[in-house]
Each structure stands twice: as structure tokens, then as C-alpha cells.
Image (cartoon, rainbow, N blue to C red; front, side, top):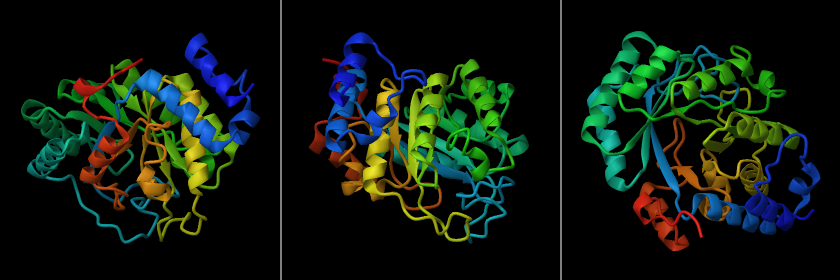
Length: 330
């Protein structure tokens, strides 16, 4: 089977790639430009010309108890990051409004730590209630291993999406983190889904994993029915165990985006950290596999593009992030 024939099977026959029918060799050896073009056909069919942009605010920074080897915020990694407690509500609201006014679709509070609990979680709920009441921007949260009651409180406060990356494959996960497990991740995702949240879950590539690990991650996300899949490329941070990891190539990032589109054809494949590795800040894959992106600044590193430049890019590519302007299928 060729990559073009696989594309037609997915489009016309409802074919889906599974562990049982996986043709790994095809995904890894198909001409990259042809593969991206075919990924674009899948995206156009399932996502139309709509590109979803989200932004984040680092709501509580540093002093995290977990030992994730890539993370600047882990207390065991000495990166010199700014550390602070939960931000004031007015600062969060101002950031959300500014992002809304700039055209961003959704806004997330992201907090360091195993889980946001107690008074800090109460503060988050109050911030979400005010944003939901006064703004139109969609709301997302990323607060670690929270429980069903907390998900219900978030939903009642207006939050519709929850971000919780699985990070890598099940096999590779213990090489990246030892303070929690892959199964802990899966359990939280399933609780979020049960409580009616749209789950945003993906991971980081370029951490020394194999292509088998990347494909396994894509298959796991497909099996979970994940609707939004952020793909981050590792940007090695001094002071972390992965600080000397060679940077992944632009070609490998682009092929990974395409593979994730083929395995998860109906999902939003979302560019995250590391967009700057790609030519023109990801322009070569937006609309050709990637149907969403984080915009503005990342948690601890500057983003590859501004919100304004991302909006200009959409116009240039004939795409939109406004649902009312979208053409969802042909």
C-alpha cells in the first residue's frame, strides 16, 4: 500500500490504523512531502480549514515534587526558574482577556506540582468563574492528578477542556519520570473523560525515544479517543537531566506530525513547544497535519511566534481560527 492509497482508505472506507494492521515501514519511509500533502487531505476532510489556537498562563511556578527529566519546574532540577505561588485572580483575568482580544480560541491555567489542591484550587475555581462570566474565550485547565470532584467543580466553573500529557510511550515513560506512572496518567485522563471533559493529551518528542515509542504514543492516544493532541519538541533546558540531548530535526518533527494525523485522523494535532525547529515557525505543517497550536509564550520558554504573527499566517494559508468562518468539509 502507498501513502496515497492509505489516505483514500481512511477517507472513503473509514479505515483506521491500529496495532494489528500497523504498517510501520510505510509511515517511516514514505516521501515526507507527499506524506504531509496526504496528511493535509485528511485534515481538510475531518477538520476543514479551522485551526484552533490556545494560550496558557503559568498559574503556579516551580517547586514541583515530580522528577520529570525534561522539566524546568521540578524541584530536583536546578534551572534557576522563577518560583511563585498561585497568581492573583486579576492577573489571570487580564491575561485571558488580552488573549481573547488578540483572537485566541481558548485559555488555560497551568500549574506546577503533582496536583492543585486546597486553597490554591479554590483560587483557580474563582478565577475560572469570573472568566466564564465575563469573557467568551473557551477555558482549559492543566493541574495534574486531580480527582472526580475537582473535575466537577472545574466543569461547573466553566472549564470544558483538561490538559494532561502522557508524555511518551508506556515503554519509555520510566526513563522520563519515576515519581508517578504511565497508568497514573491514563487513570486521570479517564476520570476527566467520565466527568465530561474534552481531554487534551500528547507528549514530547526528541527525548531520546525511538520511532516505535512515538508511534506507540500515537496509538495509545487513539485508543483513548483523545480529541486534542499537543506535540512538543524537546527544547533542552540547562539544569535538567536532558540538557545535553541533541535537538530533534525539523524533518523528524514534521514526519511525527504526519504520523499522528494518520493514526488520529479526526483529532486536533496541536503544535506546542519547539515550533521554532520547523521552518517558518511551523507554517510547513499547519494545514498539512497540524490543525491547532499553542500560541504566545510557553510555560518557561518564549514561543516561536506571536499571536499576531500566527493570525497573519492563517490569512496567508487561507485558514481560519473562527468557527463561524470555517468550512468543515467538502
